[in-house]
Amino acid sequence: LKGIEVDKLSNLLQSALNEQKSDSSDITSFSKKVAQVNDNTDEQITKSREAGLDAIKNGEVAALVLSGGQGTRLGFNGPKGMYNIGMPSGRSLFQMISERITKLSQLASSSSPEKGDKDSEPDAKKQKVDDSARSIPWYIMTSPINHNETEEYFKSNSYFGLPSDSVMLFQQGMLPCLTNDGKIIMETPSKVSMAPDGNGGIYPSMVKAGALDDMKKRGIKYLHVFSIDNALVKPADPIFMGYCIKEGADCGNKVLWKSHAHEKVGVMAEKSGKPCIVEYSDITTEMAEKTDDDGRLVFGAGNICNHFYTIDFIDKVVLPNMSDMYHVARKKIPFYDQDKKETVTPAANNGIKLETFIFDVFPLSKSMAVLDVNREEEFAPVKNAPGAASDSPDTARGLMSSLSKKWVIEAGGNLVGEKDSNSCEVSPLTSYAGEGLDKLVKGKDIECPFSV
Image (cartoon, rainbow, N blue to C red; front, top):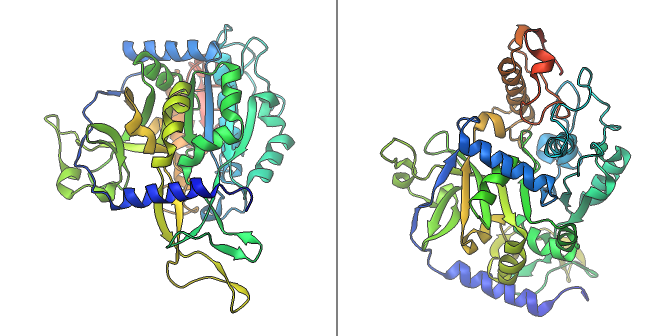
Protein backbone atom coordinates (compact mmCIF):
# COMPACT_ATOMS: atom_id res chain seq x y z
CA LEU A 1 0.00 0.00 0.00
CA LYS A 2 2.90 2.35 0.69
CA GLY A 3 3.85 2.22 -3.00
CA ILE A 4 0.42 3.36 -4.18
CA GLU A 5 0.15 7.06 -5.02
CA VAL A 6 -3.46 7.51 -3.92
CA ASP A 7 -3.85 11.11 -5.10
CA LYS A 8 -2.44 10.25 -8.51
CA LEU A 9 -4.67 7.18 -8.75
CA SER A 10 -7.71 9.28 -7.89
CA ASN A 11 -6.82 11.79 -10.60
CA LEU A 12 -6.36 9.02 -13.18
CA LEU A 13 -9.77 7.58 -12.31
CA GLN A 14 -11.53 10.93 -12.52
CA SER A 15 -9.89 11.72 -15.86
CA ALA A 16 -10.85 8.30 -17.23
CA LEU A 17 -14.46 8.69 -16.08
CA ASN A 18 -14.66 12.13 -17.68
CA GLU A 19 -13.26 10.74 -20.92
CA GLN A 20 -15.86 7.97 -20.83
CA LYS A 21 -18.70 10.46 -20.40
CA SER A 22 -17.52 12.91 -23.03
CA ASP A 23 -19.03 12.94 -26.52
CA SER A 24 -16.75 11.55 -29.18
CA SER A 25 -15.62 14.04 -31.79
CA ASP A 26 -16.60 13.39 -35.37
CA ILE A 27 -14.32 10.84 -36.95
CA THR A 28 -12.79 11.83 -40.26
CA SER A 29 -10.29 10.12 -42.53
CA PHE A 30 -6.58 10.69 -42.06
CA SER A 31 -5.82 13.78 -44.10
CA LYS A 32 -2.03 13.69 -44.21
CA LYS A 33 0.21 11.95 -46.73
CA VAL A 34 0.57 8.18 -46.43
CA ALA A 35 3.69 6.92 -48.18
CA GLN A 36 3.62 3.45 -49.73
CA VAL A 37 6.38 0.89 -49.99
CA ASN A 38 5.52 -0.81 -53.26
CA ASP A 39 8.92 -0.80 -54.88
CA ASN A 40 12.11 -0.99 -52.86
CA THR A 41 14.02 0.53 -55.79
CA ASP A 42 11.98 3.71 -55.54
CA GLU A 43 14.25 6.71 -54.99
CA GLN A 44 12.35 7.89 -51.92
CA ILE A 45 12.60 4.46 -50.31
CA THR A 46 16.33 4.30 -51.10
CA LYS A 47 16.89 7.69 -49.47
CA SER A 48 14.81 6.67 -46.47
CA ARG A 49 16.84 3.50 -46.04
CA GLU A 50 20.08 5.47 -46.23
CA ALA A 51 18.84 7.96 -43.64
CA GLY A 52 17.82 5.11 -41.35
CA LEU A 53 21.14 3.30 -41.71
CA ASP A 54 23.02 6.54 -41.02
CA ALA A 55 21.02 7.11 -37.83
CA ILE A 56 21.68 3.53 -36.72
CA LYS A 57 25.39 3.83 -37.50
CA ASN A 58 25.53 7.05 -35.46
CA GLY A 59 23.99 5.29 -32.45
CA GLU A 60 20.76 7.29 -32.58
CA VAL A 61 18.25 4.42 -32.94
CA ALA A 62 16.94 1.91 -30.41
CA ALA A 63 14.33 -0.86 -30.61
CA LEU A 64 11.71 -1.73 -28.00
CA VAL A 65 9.46 -4.80 -28.01
CA LEU A 66 6.21 -5.19 -26.09
CA SER A 67 6.46 -8.70 -24.70
CA GLY A 68 4.52 -8.86 -21.48
CA GLY A 69 2.16 -11.60 -22.64
CA GLN A 70 2.18 -15.34 -22.17
CA GLY A 71 1.74 -17.94 -24.92
CA THR A 72 -1.48 -19.26 -23.39
CA ARG A 73 -3.57 -18.92 -26.57
CA LEU A 74 -0.85 -20.79 -28.43
CA GLY A 75 -0.99 -23.67 -25.98
CA PHE A 76 2.46 -22.66 -24.73
CA ASN A 77 3.28 -22.33 -21.05
CA GLY A 78 5.77 -19.49 -21.09
CA PRO A 79 6.47 -15.99 -22.39
CA LYS A 80 5.21 -15.60 -25.95
CA GLY A 81 8.61 -14.40 -27.11
CA MET A 82 10.07 -17.81 -26.27
CA TYR A 83 7.66 -19.53 -28.62
CA ASN A 84 9.07 -21.51 -31.57
CA ILE A 85 6.74 -21.30 -34.61
CA GLY A 86 8.28 -24.40 -36.20
CA MET A 87 10.79 -23.12 -38.73
CA PRO A 88 13.67 -25.52 -39.60
CA SER A 89 16.09 -23.69 -37.29
CA GLY A 90 13.76 -23.87 -34.29
CA ARG A 91 14.23 -20.16 -33.63
CA SER A 92 11.95 -18.50 -31.10
CA LEU A 93 10.39 -15.11 -31.72
CA PHE A 94 12.96 -13.54 -29.39
CA GLN A 95 15.82 -15.19 -31.25
CA MET A 96 14.55 -14.02 -34.64
CA ILE A 97 14.46 -10.41 -33.47
CA SER A 98 17.84 -10.66 -31.74
CA GLU A 99 19.51 -11.96 -34.89
CA ARG A 100 17.82 -9.37 -37.12
CA ILE A 101 19.24 -6.70 -34.82
CA THR A 102 22.68 -8.30 -35.13
CA LYS A 103 22.47 -8.33 -38.91
CA LEU A 104 21.12 -4.79 -39.16
CA SER A 105 23.87 -3.52 -36.88
CA GLN A 106 26.38 -5.06 -39.30
CA LEU A 107 24.66 -3.53 -42.33
CA ALA A 108 24.67 -0.10 -40.75
CA SER A 109 28.34 -0.25 -39.84
CA SER A 110 31.13 0.87 -42.10
CA SER A 111 31.79 -2.74 -43.06
CA SER A 112 30.28 -4.18 -46.24
CA PRO A 113 26.88 -5.88 -45.95
CA GLU A 114 28.54 -9.01 -47.27
CA LYS A 115 31.30 -8.99 -44.65
CA GLY A 116 32.12 -12.44 -43.31
CA ASP A 117 31.79 -16.00 -44.54
CA LYS A 118 28.20 -16.81 -45.43
CA ASP A 119 28.77 -20.30 -46.81
CA SER A 120 27.60 -21.68 -43.50
CA GLU A 121 25.25 -20.31 -40.86
CA PRO A 122 26.98 -19.09 -37.69
CA ASP A 123 26.13 -20.53 -34.31
CA ALA A 124 23.43 -18.23 -32.92
CA LYS A 125 24.86 -18.33 -29.40
CA LYS A 126 28.37 -17.46 -30.58
CA GLN A 127 27.53 -14.98 -33.33
CA LYS A 128 28.57 -11.50 -32.26
CA VAL A 129 27.97 -8.11 -33.76
CA ASP A 130 31.07 -7.23 -35.79
CA ASP A 131 33.66 -5.29 -33.82
CA SER A 132 33.22 -2.47 -36.32
CA ALA A 133 29.45 -2.37 -35.77
CA ARG A 134 27.67 -0.57 -32.96
CA SER A 135 24.91 -2.83 -31.66
CA ILE A 136 21.43 -1.34 -31.73
CA PRO A 137 20.19 -1.07 -28.12
CA TRP A 138 17.21 -3.33 -27.51
CA TYR A 139 14.68 -2.72 -24.73
CA ILE A 140 12.30 -5.53 -23.78
CA MET A 141 9.16 -4.66 -21.84
CA THR A 142 8.01 -7.68 -19.87
CA SER A 143 5.37 -8.08 -17.16
CA PRO A 144 5.46 -9.35 -13.58
CA ILE A 145 4.23 -12.76 -14.77
CA ASN A 146 7.04 -13.36 -17.24
CA HIS A 147 9.94 -11.04 -16.38
CA ASN A 148 12.14 -13.50 -14.49
CA GLU A 149 11.65 -16.29 -17.00
CA THR A 150 12.40 -13.96 -19.91
CA GLU A 151 15.52 -12.64 -18.21
CA GLU A 152 16.82 -16.14 -17.52
CA TYR A 153 16.05 -17.18 -21.12
CA PHE A 154 18.24 -14.43 -22.53
CA LYS A 155 21.05 -15.10 -20.06
CA SER A 156 21.05 -18.84 -20.75
CA ASN A 157 21.23 -18.18 -24.50
CA SER A 158 24.00 -15.58 -24.20
CA TYR A 159 21.58 -12.93 -25.48
CA PHE A 160 21.67 -14.67 -28.87
CA GLY A 161 24.94 -13.01 -29.73
CA LEU A 162 24.02 -9.47 -28.73
CA PRO A 163 26.22 -7.65 -26.21
CA SER A 164 24.53 -8.08 -22.85
CA ASP A 165 24.90 -4.38 -22.11
CA SER A 166 22.85 -3.52 -25.22
CA VAL A 167 19.81 -5.47 -23.98
CA MET A 168 17.66 -4.06 -21.16
CA LEU A 169 14.60 -5.76 -19.73
CA PHE A 170 12.02 -3.80 -17.73
CA GLN A 171 8.53 -4.49 -16.46
CA GLN A 172 5.20 -3.08 -17.55
CA GLY A 173 3.43 -1.03 -14.91
CA MET A 174 0.60 -2.21 -12.68
CA LEU A 175 -2.26 -0.25 -11.15
CA PRO A 176 -4.67 -1.15 -8.32
CA CYS A 177 -8.12 -2.38 -9.31
CA LEU A 178 -10.94 -0.20 -8.03
CA THR A 179 -14.55 -0.61 -7.01
CA ASN A 180 -17.15 1.26 -9.04
CA ASP A 181 -17.10 4.00 -6.40
CA GLY A 182 -13.31 4.35 -6.54
CA LYS A 183 -12.09 2.29 -3.59
CA ILE A 184 -9.07 0.00 -3.84
CA ILE A 185 -10.00 -3.69 -4.10
CA MET A 186 -8.20 -6.13 -1.82
CA GLU A 187 -7.51 -9.59 -3.29
CA THR A 188 -6.60 -10.98 0.14
CA PRO A 189 -6.46 -9.30 3.57
CA SER A 190 -2.85 -8.30 2.83
CA LYS A 191 -2.72 -8.07 -0.96
CA VAL A 192 -4.07 -5.33 -3.24
CA SER A 193 -5.69 -6.51 -6.47
CA MET A 194 -3.43 -5.26 -9.26
CA ALA A 195 -3.72 -5.28 -13.05
CA PRO A 196 -1.46 -4.25 -15.96
CA ASP A 197 -1.99 -0.66 -17.07
CA GLY A 198 -2.27 -1.51 -20.80
CA ASN A 199 0.40 -1.31 -23.48
CA GLY A 200 0.22 2.48 -23.20
CA GLY A 201 1.82 2.02 -19.80
CA ILE A 202 5.08 1.72 -21.72
CA TYR A 203 5.74 5.44 -21.30
CA PRO A 204 5.67 5.77 -17.49
CA SER A 205 7.30 2.33 -17.22
CA MET A 206 10.25 3.57 -19.29
CA VAL A 207 10.74 6.32 -16.71
CA LYS A 208 10.25 4.18 -13.62
CA ALA A 209 12.63 1.45 -14.83
CA GLY A 210 15.30 3.90 -15.96
CA ALA A 211 14.99 2.88 -19.62
CA LEU A 212 14.36 6.44 -20.80
CA ASP A 213 17.38 7.75 -18.90
CA ASP A 214 19.45 4.94 -20.37
CA MET A 215 18.39 5.96 -23.88
CA LYS A 216 19.35 9.57 -23.21
CA LYS A 217 22.76 8.57 -21.86
CA ARG A 218 23.38 6.50 -25.00
CA GLY A 219 22.46 9.44 -27.22
CA ILE A 220 19.37 7.75 -28.63
CA LYS A 221 17.16 10.13 -30.61
CA TYR A 222 14.69 7.75 -32.25
CA LEU A 223 12.80 4.73 -30.91
CA HIS A 224 11.11 1.90 -32.80
CA VAL A 225 8.39 0.14 -30.77
CA PHE A 226 6.65 -3.05 -31.89
CA SER A 227 4.80 -6.09 -30.60
CA ILE A 228 6.38 -9.51 -30.03
CA ASP A 229 3.68 -11.44 -31.88
CA ASN A 230 4.75 -10.60 -35.44
CA ALA A 231 7.21 -13.16 -36.80
CA LEU A 232 8.18 -10.89 -39.72
CA VAL A 233 8.79 -7.72 -37.72
CA LYS A 234 11.82 -5.70 -38.82
CA PRO A 235 13.36 -4.26 -35.65
CA ALA A 236 14.73 -0.72 -36.12
CA ASP A 237 13.60 -0.96 -39.76
CA PRO A 238 15.88 1.53 -41.55
CA ILE A 239 13.27 2.36 -44.20
CA PHE A 240 10.60 3.20 -41.63
CA MET A 241 12.98 4.98 -39.28
CA GLY A 242 14.61 6.87 -42.15
CA TYR A 243 11.27 7.89 -43.64
CA CYS A 244 10.09 9.31 -40.32
CA ILE A 245 13.40 11.09 -39.77
CA LYS A 246 13.37 12.63 -43.25
CA GLU A 247 9.76 13.76 -42.74
CA GLY A 248 10.71 15.49 -39.49
CA ALA A 249 8.15 13.38 -37.64
CA ASP A 250 7.82 13.35 -33.87
CA CYS A 251 5.71 10.18 -34.08
CA GLY A 252 5.14 7.61 -36.81
CA ASN A 253 2.98 4.60 -37.58
CA LYS A 254 3.76 1.72 -39.90
CA VAL A 255 0.48 0.40 -41.32
CA LEU A 256 -0.95 -2.25 -43.60
CA TRP A 257 -3.81 -1.34 -45.91
CA LYS A 258 -6.86 -3.39 -45.00
CA SER A 259 -7.39 -6.50 -47.12
CA HIS A 260 -11.13 -5.75 -47.23
CA ALA A 261 -13.50 -3.12 -45.90
CA HIS A 262 -14.57 -5.06 -42.82
CA GLU A 263 -11.23 -6.44 -41.66
CA LYS A 264 -11.29 -6.26 -37.87
CA VAL A 265 -8.43 -3.89 -37.27
CA GLY A 266 -8.11 -0.34 -35.93
CA VAL A 267 -7.33 2.30 -38.54
CA MET A 268 -5.58 5.65 -38.80
CA ALA A 269 -8.10 8.49 -38.72
CA GLU A 270 -8.58 11.94 -37.20
CA LYS A 271 -10.70 13.40 -34.43
CA SER A 272 -10.94 17.17 -34.24
CA GLY A 273 -8.21 17.32 -36.85
CA LYS A 274 -5.76 15.30 -34.74
CA PRO A 275 -4.32 11.89 -35.70
CA CYS A 276 -5.69 8.88 -33.86
CA ILE A 277 -6.49 5.19 -34.10
CA VAL A 278 -10.17 4.33 -34.39
CA GLU A 279 -11.30 0.80 -33.61
CA TYR A 280 -13.16 -1.02 -36.39
CA SER A 281 -16.24 -1.20 -34.18
CA ASP A 282 -16.38 2.61 -33.97
CA ILE A 283 -16.75 3.35 -37.66
CA THR A 284 -19.97 2.94 -39.61
CA THR A 285 -20.48 0.49 -42.47
CA GLU A 286 -20.58 3.44 -44.84
CA MET A 287 -17.26 4.73 -43.55
CA ALA A 288 -15.66 1.30 -43.67
CA GLU A 289 -16.69 0.82 -47.30
CA LYS A 290 -15.91 4.33 -48.52
CA THR A 291 -13.27 4.52 -51.25
CA ASP A 292 -11.33 7.33 -52.92
CA ASP A 293 -11.14 8.13 -56.64
CA ASP A 294 -8.65 5.29 -57.10
CA GLY A 295 -10.93 2.77 -55.46
CA ARG A 296 -8.78 2.58 -52.31
CA LEU A 297 -10.40 2.37 -48.90
CA VAL A 298 -10.46 5.79 -47.25
CA PHE A 299 -10.37 4.22 -43.77
CA GLY A 300 -7.85 1.62 -44.84
CA ALA A 301 -4.61 2.26 -42.96
CA GLY A 302 -4.66 -0.68 -40.54
CA ASN A 303 -2.77 -0.39 -37.26
CA ILE A 304 -0.30 -3.22 -36.49
CA CYS A 305 1.38 -1.81 -33.34
CA ASN A 306 4.54 -0.70 -35.10
CA HIS A 307 5.54 2.82 -34.11
CA PHE A 308 8.26 5.46 -34.33
CA TYR A 309 8.96 8.13 -31.72
CA THR A 310 11.54 10.77 -31.09
CA ILE A 311 12.85 10.61 -27.54
CA ASP A 312 12.03 14.30 -27.18
CA PHE A 313 8.38 13.62 -28.06
CA ILE A 314 8.10 10.94 -25.36
CA ASP A 315 9.96 12.98 -22.77
CA LYS A 316 8.56 16.47 -23.35
CA VAL A 317 5.11 15.85 -24.80
CA VAL A 318 3.80 12.39 -23.91
CA LEU A 319 4.86 12.02 -20.29
CA PRO A 320 3.50 15.40 -19.09
CA ASN A 321 0.09 14.46 -20.55
CA MET A 322 -0.23 10.82 -19.43
CA SER A 323 -2.86 11.57 -16.77
CA ASP A 324 -5.42 12.31 -19.48
CA MET A 325 -4.99 9.04 -21.37
CA TYR A 326 -6.45 6.33 -19.16
CA HIS A 327 -9.68 4.50 -19.91
CA VAL A 328 -12.15 2.65 -17.71
CA ALA A 329 -12.46 -1.10 -18.27
CA ARG A 330 -15.21 -2.68 -16.19
CA LYS A 331 -14.23 -6.23 -15.27
CA LYS A 332 -14.94 -9.17 -12.98
CA ILE A 333 -12.28 -8.67 -10.34
CA PRO A 334 -11.64 -11.25 -7.60
CA PHE A 335 -11.98 -9.69 -4.14
CA TYR A 336 -11.66 -10.68 -0.53
CA ASP A 337 -15.08 -11.30 1.03
CA GLN A 338 -14.94 -10.26 4.67
CA ASP A 339 -17.97 -12.38 5.59
CA LYS A 340 -16.80 -15.57 3.87
CA LYS A 341 -13.18 -14.95 4.81
CA GLU A 342 -12.05 -15.96 1.33
CA THR A 343 -11.26 -14.54 -2.13
CA VAL A 344 -14.33 -14.59 -4.36
CA THR A 345 -14.63 -14.34 -8.13
CA PRO A 346 -17.83 -12.39 -8.94
CA ALA A 347 -20.34 -13.50 -11.57
CA ALA A 348 -20.74 -9.96 -12.92
CA ASN A 349 -18.50 -6.95 -13.43
CA ASN A 350 -17.78 -5.49 -10.02
CA GLY A 351 -14.91 -3.12 -10.54
CA ILE A 352 -12.65 -1.01 -12.69
CA LYS A 353 -9.25 -1.53 -14.27
CA LEU A 354 -7.53 1.58 -15.55
CA GLU A 355 -5.65 1.09 -18.79
CA THR A 356 -4.18 3.11 -21.60
CA PHE A 357 -3.26 2.18 -25.16
CA ILE A 358 0.06 2.84 -26.81
CA PHE A 359 -1.59 4.83 -29.61
CA ASP A 360 -3.45 7.15 -27.22
CA VAL A 361 -0.54 9.56 -27.63
CA PHE A 362 -1.07 10.02 -31.38
CA PRO A 363 -3.29 13.12 -30.97
CA LEU A 364 -0.37 14.85 -29.25
CA SER A 365 1.74 14.59 -32.39
CA LYS A 366 2.38 17.75 -34.37
CA SER A 367 4.06 15.94 -37.28
CA MET A 368 2.76 12.39 -37.73
CA ALA A 369 4.33 10.19 -40.40
CA VAL A 370 2.55 7.11 -41.77
CA LEU A 371 4.15 4.45 -43.94
CA ASP A 372 2.10 1.75 -45.68
CA VAL A 373 4.14 -1.45 -46.15
CA ASN A 374 3.72 -4.78 -47.90
CA ARG A 375 1.75 -7.30 -45.87
CA GLU A 376 3.53 -10.35 -47.26
CA GLU A 377 6.92 -8.92 -46.28
CA GLU A 378 6.17 -7.43 -42.87
CA PHE A 379 3.29 -9.12 -41.09
CA ALA A 380 3.00 -12.68 -39.86
CA PRO A 381 0.94 -12.49 -36.65
CA VAL A 382 1.24 -15.28 -34.11
CA LYS A 383 -1.86 -14.99 -31.94
CA ASN A 384 -3.96 -18.15 -32.32
CA ALA A 385 -3.28 -21.80 -31.58
CA PRO A 386 -1.72 -24.15 -34.14
CA GLY A 387 -4.33 -25.29 -36.64
CA ALA A 388 -6.30 -22.04 -36.58
CA ALA A 389 -7.26 -20.66 -39.99
CA SER A 390 -5.49 -17.33 -39.43
CA ASP A 391 -2.84 -15.64 -37.30
CA SER A 392 -1.42 -18.98 -36.16
CA PRO A 393 2.10 -20.43 -36.04
CA ASP A 394 1.19 -22.38 -39.19
CA THR A 395 0.17 -19.31 -41.18
CA ALA A 396 3.20 -17.39 -39.89
CA ARG A 397 5.47 -20.25 -40.94
CA GLY A 398 3.92 -20.22 -44.39
CA LEU A 399 4.41 -16.46 -44.73
CA MET A 400 8.04 -16.65 -43.59
CA SER A 401 8.72 -19.52 -45.97
CA SER A 402 7.10 -17.72 -48.90
CA LEU A 403 9.20 -14.62 -48.23
CA SER A 404 12.40 -16.68 -48.03
CA LYS A 405 11.61 -18.29 -51.39
CA LYS A 406 10.87 -14.87 -52.88
CA TRP A 407 14.24 -13.56 -51.71
CA VAL A 408 16.09 -16.53 -53.19
CA ILE A 409 14.36 -16.12 -56.56
CA GLU A 410 15.06 -12.38 -56.61
CA ALA A 411 18.73 -13.13 -55.88
CA GLY A 412 18.92 -15.38 -58.95
CA GLY A 413 18.39 -18.77 -57.35
CA ASN A 414 16.35 -21.53 -59.01
CA LEU A 415 13.96 -23.33 -56.68
CA VAL A 416 13.63 -27.09 -57.15
CA GLY A 417 12.16 -29.91 -55.10
CA GLU A 418 9.12 -29.34 -52.88
CA LYS A 419 8.38 -25.78 -53.97
CA ASP A 420 5.19 -25.64 -51.89
CA SER A 421 7.11 -26.43 -48.70
CA ASN A 422 6.50 -24.20 -45.70
CA SER A 423 9.91 -25.09 -44.29
CA CYS A 424 12.09 -22.75 -46.32
CA GLU A 425 14.17 -20.35 -44.28
CA VAL A 426 16.74 -17.62 -44.81
CA SER A 427 18.57 -17.04 -41.54
CA PRO A 428 18.28 -13.53 -40.08
CA LEU A 429 22.06 -13.70 -39.68
CA THR A 430 22.39 -14.21 -43.43
CA SER A 431 20.00 -11.49 -44.58
CA TYR A 432 17.91 -8.82 -42.87
CA ALA A 433 15.59 -8.08 -45.80
CA GLY A 434 16.75 -10.14 -48.76
CA GLU A 435 20.07 -8.38 -49.32
CA GLY A 436 23.36 -10.20 -49.92
CA LEU A 437 21.94 -13.53 -51.09
CA ASP A 438 23.21 -13.45 -54.67
CA LYS A 439 26.66 -14.76 -53.71
CA LEU A 440 25.01 -17.77 -52.12
CA VAL A 441 22.25 -18.66 -54.57
CA LYS A 442 22.71 -16.90 -57.92
CA GLY A 443 22.66 -19.40 -60.78
CA LYS A 444 22.22 -22.33 -58.39
CA ASP A 445 19.45 -24.87 -57.89
CA ILE A 446 18.13 -24.48 -54.36
CA GLU A 447 16.41 -27.60 -53.08
CA CYS A 448 13.17 -26.96 -51.18
CA PRO A 449 12.82 -27.14 -48.24
CA PHE A 450 16.01 -25.20 -47.54
CA SER A 451 17.84 -23.31 -44.84
CA VAL A 452 20.22 -20.61 -46.04
